[in-house]
Image 1 (cartoon, rainbow, N blue to C red):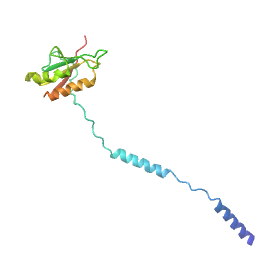
Image 2 (cartoon, rainbow, N blue to C red; image 1 turned 120 degrees about the horizontal axis):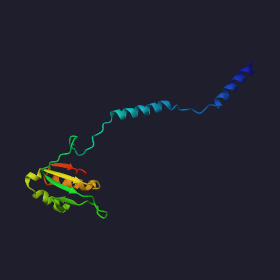
Image 3 (tube, rainbow, N blue to C red; image 1 turned 90 degrees about the vertical axis):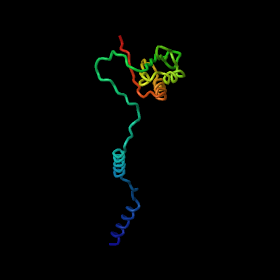
Image 4 (cartoon, one colour; image 1 turned 180 degrees about the horizontal axis):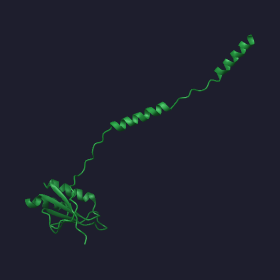
Length: 149
């Protein structure tokens, strides 16, 4: 009888010695991470990006009447130039002269600036022109294109 009990003890001792390393179940942790991800996606609000409001004309035929206001045409820059040539009142001007011309223009012309630029003109030049116009007190700024023939 003792042998049977002894065998049971040795069997139990070997089982204790052959103890397996503990395993961690990753499924609950993955569930928690996904729940946190969903929570932050739902609760996050995004601030709208500041920009320039542009009121587009209604679709249809282009207007043939000449708009009232100052008209600045910007030509494509030449290969060696960085900025395009600016023309105000059929006179070539640069940024140094532009502010003075905006300030000294008649009040009926000063209420609106219309910018006509060609395709290759850099946005930086157009924005700089818009900043000068705002500093000179011109509130309305429009963009115009010349119809291709």
